[in-house]
Length: 561
Image (cartoon, rainbow, N blue to C red; front, side):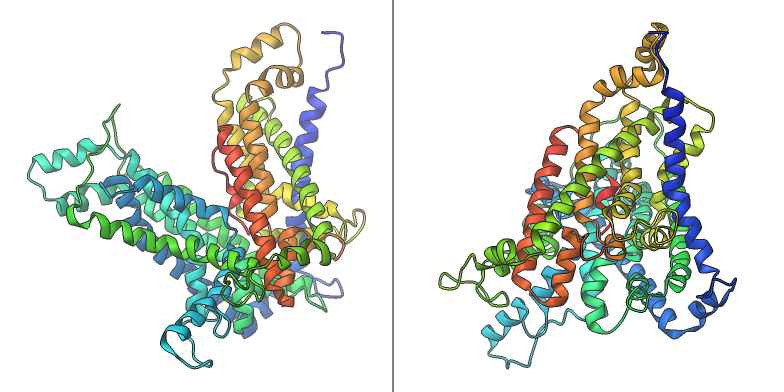
C-alpha cells in the first residue's frame, strides 16, 4: 500500500480551491460591479442612486416593515403554541407538532400562489364562498390578497414553523425541577412562568425572531407572487426587476450589498443570542417537566392550534387540490365539474413541462451528489484537522449561509457572463448556484455526524499504510452512509424548491420546476400551476420522509425559496 500513489493532498487542496472559487468569485465580482458604471469606469454613483432614488428607498422601507412585522407575528403565535404543545396536557399535542413541521414541505412561493387562489378579490375561493353565503355583489370581496398586510400574513404563515420548532424544542429541554421548586416555594403559575419559564426561553425566542426577520428579509417568491401585482416592490423583487430588459447589473449589484451586509449582521446577532449563558442551566440529568393541566381550556386550546394550522396547511392544500381537479380552476369543484384535464394539459399539451422536470431532476441529482461529496471531504478536513487552515475552510463552507439566494444569483450572473467562463445560458451556472447555496446545510449535517466516528478507526488504517483519502473512502464514509444518504436527500429537496437564484440565472432552455411555476403564474395557467405545485410537494414529502427514515436531521437547504 505504501508504494501506491497518494492523491490525498492534491484532492484536499483541490477541494479548498474549488470552495474558494465557488464563493469568492461571485462575491468579488458583485463588489467590483457595484463600483463600476456602464462604461466600466470606477464610480460611487450606483450607491448614490440606491440611497437617494425613491424607487429604491421605498422597497427597502417596505422590506423592513415586512420583516419586523413577520418576526413579531411569528413570536406572538409560536410562543403560546410551543408552550401548549411542550408543556400542557392539550390533546393531540404530537399531531399538532407533526402538522406544524409538515408545513415546511410547502415552498413559500407555492403557499403564496395557494393563498392567491383563496383570497384574490374577484376569483378567490373564500370570497366566492362569502358571496354565496351572504348574497353580496360580484364586485364585493371579504379578502384582498394584494395588499401589504396580506403579504405579511402569507410570509408569516410559512415562517412560523421555524420559530415554533425552536421554541417547542427549547421548552422540551427545559428542566422541570426549576418550576417544581418555584411551586413548592409558593409561587403561582404566573410567577413561575414570569421568573423561570420566560427567562429560560427568552434567548431562543429572540433567536427565533431573528430567524423570522431573516426569512422575510431574503424571501423572493412570495413578494414576487403578491407584491408586484399589488403595485409595490420589496428589496428582492426590486433586484430581480433590474434584470428585466434592459438589464442593469451594476445597480443590482449595488442593491445586493446592503442585503448581504444586513444578513451577515443578523446571523452574527443570532449566533450571539444563542450563545448567551445568562440563563444557562447548570448540572447533570434533569427530569421531564410536569405538564400544566388546562382543564376546561383543553379543547379551546386545541381548536386554536388547528385554526392556526389552517392558515399554512389545510386551506392552501384545499385550494391547490380544488384548482388541480376543477374544470374551471377558479371555481369550487363539484361532482359535476371534477376533471383530469389540468393534468393532461400540464404533462401532454404544455411543451415546457417535461424539459423543466428533466432539468430539475438532473440538477437536483448532480447537486445532491456533488454537494454531499464536497461536504464529506470538507467535514473530514475540519473534524480531523487534516491540513493547515482548516478553520478557514470551515468558515468558507458556512459562508453561503450569509448570502441571500437573490444576491448569489446576481453575483453568478456577473461572474459567468464574461470570459474565461461564460456559463450563462447553460445548466452549469445553475449547478454552481445550487451547490453553493446548499453546501452549508450539507456540511453542517455531516460535520455533526463526524463526531460519532472515533478517529482511532482512521488512525488504525493510517498505521497500516493507507492514505487519508483511502481511509476516508474505505472506513469513514461507510460508517457515515446513513448521514450521507440523508444529506443527499435534503439537498435534492432543496434544489426542487429553489427559486430566488434560479429566477436570475435561467433561460428558456434551462427552466427548472420552480421557475416554470413562477412563469405560469404570469401567464395565468392556474390549473397547471396547481398540478405542478402538488407534484413538487409530493416529491418533497417522499424524499423528506426517506431522509428522516435514514436518520437525517433538518437542514437549512429547506429555508430558501
